[in-house]
Image 1 (cartoon, rainbow, N blue to C red):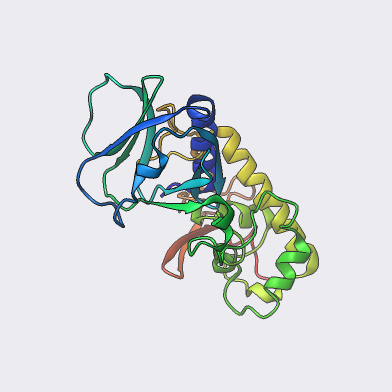
Image 2 (cartoon, rainbow, N blue to C red):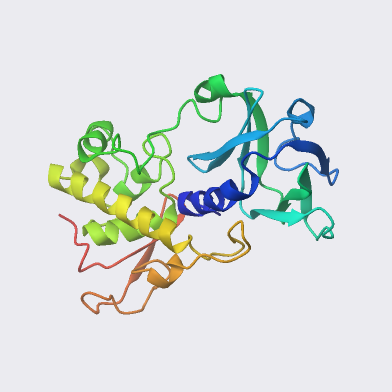
Length: 273
């Protein structure tokens, strides 16, 4: 599933290609995604003012004060292509602009979904109302993490993957951040020392920033908006490396299941404290 860095990479790829473009038509395959598609008619003849990200959602702001919200699900991809280029398999939505370009949405599993909302009401929308802070903003700090987790008895790995706490720290990036911070993934969330919360926040920010810079992680179907894969996977310290030697201490990387998700860690570098 595309995570925050992958979605941020897609947004960065789309911005220069469709910002300012006027939408003239929308067609679809006749197949629903996870939910029925919204009515696009109010967006016709409207310019896209900007493209942004909130959590793992893409936000397309239109000049009429509406925002098209899109979640990529497991296998969703956006591609900007000339109108004359033939449709491909699993292409479910095509947005056509006056400049002759199209924005194509492809989704093999059709787990993605889209919605439409007045831009002023976005934060109250059901998909956003209970989301936590953005991890790359100053609001996400060691003090914030300590305060919000002070009563949490779950593992720290599960806690930082909870979108009510902080958005966009998916399985890959949680494992990588905990390794860098030297924190065992099963450590109880409210048992960390203040310095550990601060260190973990620091590494979450660093790992996500590095992943964005690298263009995301090539896992399964993810590709960038320009059709190229991300390369942060080449930098994994623990994720997917079960049995391989730790880059720091050479002890084999271990794997456990937490909350139904696989977790990779080094038992020596991430000793329980």
